[in-house]
Image 1 (cartoon, rainbow, N blue to C red):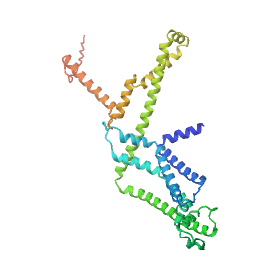
Image 2: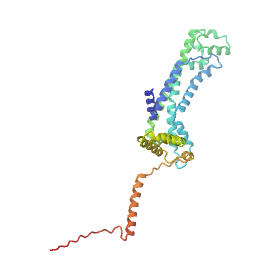
Image 3: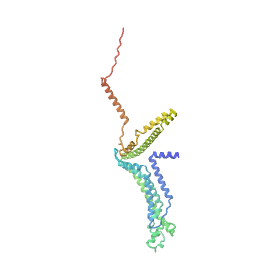
Image 4: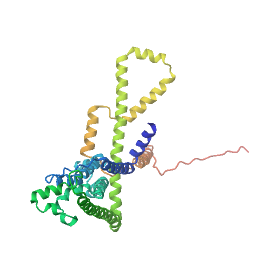
Length: 351
C-alpha cells in the first residue's frame, strides 16, 4: 500500500508523466473492453447499419470525453478562460496550446478503438452486409425468385452464422467485407500516423520562441494553481489548529493551567515554537471574512506577473535612510556630512 501511495504521489508531482500514464491505461482498457465485448449483430435490416456504425463511433466518443474528464488541466483551462481579466491579461495562444495538448492525449484511446474495430471487421460486416451483390460470391440461384424485401432480409442474416443456411456463400461474403474493413483500418492508421508526423515536423518550422513562451506559461498556470491549493491547505490547517487551541484554552480555564504546571517546563518551549510557526503560517489572515475576501480577490483580480525585488528594495531603503539620517545629524550638530573630525596630540618636554 505504501509503495502504491509513493508511486501515486510521484505521478501527481509529475503531471506530464501522470497524464501519459492515464492515456496509456485508457488505451489498454479500450483494447481489453473490445476483446471481452460480446458482439451480437441483430441481423435485421432495420438495425444492422445502426448497430454496426454505432459500435464504431459511440465508444470512441465516450473514450474521448472520458479523456477530458480525467485530465486535470481541463479545469485549469476552464478557469483561465472564464476568469475576469483583472491585472493579468489573457493570452489566447496559451489557451489554444492547453486545449490542443488535452485533445491530443484524449484522442489516443478512441483511435485505438477504431483501429481494433476496423481490423476485426465484425461491425463493418454487420453494417454493410445488406449492400452486397450476392451473385459475385457463388451459386445465388435460390434468391432469384425472392422479392427485394426478402433479399434484404436474407443479406442481413449473413453476420449471424446460425441464421444463414448457405455456409460457403456466407464465408465468401464475410471474407470480402472483412478485407475491406481491414483496408479501411490500415488507411486510418496511416492517416493518424501521417498527421502526427506532420504535427511533429511542422512545429519547428514556426517561431520556436512563441512555442516556448506558450509552453512556459501553460506550465506556470498549472503550477500556480497547485501551489495556491497547497498554500490554502497549509493555511486552513494552521487556522484550524489555532482555532482549536484557542477553543480549548477558553473552555478549560483553570484546569488547563493546572495541568500545564504539572506537565513540566521543558515542553513549554516546543509548544511556543509550534504556536509561533502556526501563527506565521496564517500570514496575518485571522478572520473568516478576511479569508473570503482574499479568495474572492484572487479569483476576480489575480496579481500581475511582475515580481518585486523585496530584499533589494529593503537594502536600498536602509542605505538611503542611513545617508539621510547621517546628513540630518550632521546639520543638527553644526557640521556637514563631509566634515571630518581631527585629533591633535601635544607633547610637552620638561628638559
